[in-house]
Length: 277
Image (cartoon, helix red, strand yellow):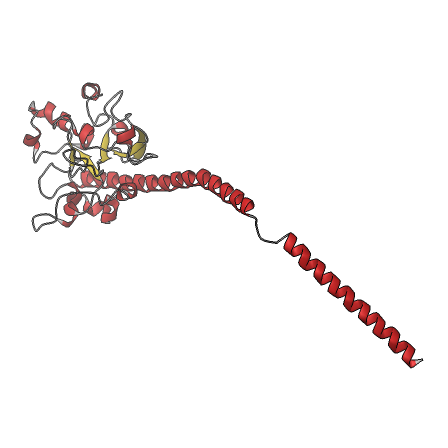
């Protein structure tokens, strides 16, 4: 009886081992027929889908990043505009005089303090914003990298002195309350910082925006499309730039709207139309 049970047990075990071997063989055969990795076509499809998604997402990410730069730049200009009002409040309503030394970055320093406020983050992506070279004759504020320039109020001084020569306005100051439309008259704008081959110069070091210098600094020194989808709106006439106004506000203005239908750098109604283009 014991031998009978032993034979039955050995037979059952042998059959189970055979079944297990068969199952393992089938599994190996299935694996070889249907590998768990991707085929070449499947990989190419996945890569194509990723490329399509990237082409859709990257421009949106770029626009979001530029939007953040633009907002930071507006905040910088807002602080400069407030600094200008603080200066006027402490100097009998007068704005900083036009000078060749101790210029407006130095005169207003008490109001903004941090020199990084002088740099637009979009402008910085094109290279260090140019200014005058550092020297013992220049203050730290004047020689610091700078993205902005201030209104030189040429039309006002021209009307006051009847002299169109910008160089004769040195040392002159303008009363803050002489501005006719404070919320629509530009106090600060963004200047050009675009490397190009000579003889063309798109790297502005100007401190003052002079309507009556050359063909007008609103055309050759101001970057009117700093915040654009491409490198700069001056090339594509797109986007726009940030501006600070004499009422203490700051905002983004679309390309060309700061000079048409009225030139927002000018003061009197007559000159706002006369300098429009």
